[in-house]
Image (cartoon, rainbow, N blue to C red; front, side, top):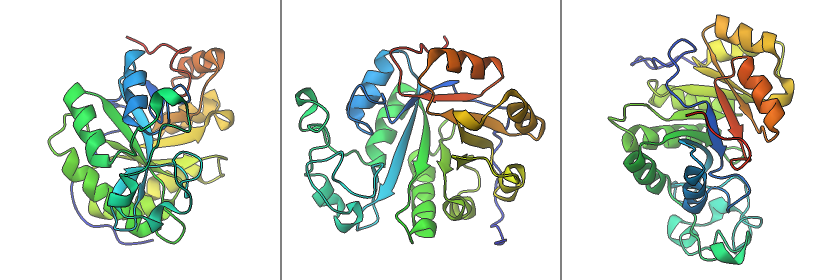
Length: 258
């Protein structure tokens, strides 16, 4: 295991969880073009005060909101995101694919999201989405930028990733930012992996969670988040089990707690 840089440790834990329980997935899920400011504004209109979104690096190392490795699905262009500079990405239409009302919506930078969320007192979960082979670079770069952009914020951004390499790199450069390890399927050693990365939380596919798993995570000091919960009955069950963060596309069907 890599030696970790000494520094402040995130105070976030199951016993000190500062985030809202309801989290809008990629802004407003599927009701607006994902990972755009338009989606954030729509999610906020339904009362959501925390947003999950994906961040990748451009060819010149700038963090922008994008889920896929390629531009084809959610922009007016095609090919790899990391083949374009920030200036080139800024020219793309990230809304027209969704519906005509959102045509011309730009790909936001992480800095633009920081300005919007901090001005409105919103909370965020940054999912670090590295291109294959760029895990360490991406984890470190995004964590450093998040540390700068949210400096002085009352509640720090929560960093999450499926990549343990990216989270380890984020921990080295910004140990004070809380981290959550993402799992689609839960391995037998999930608790050990969270401990090894100094995580604040488990973030898992809701299908693999049970009341006992949430209780085990809490007993070990970890918060628990779950994605992507779009059925109101399942959402109610998970929250009754003590889930700390419910990530949903269904911002119109699952009202956030006041």
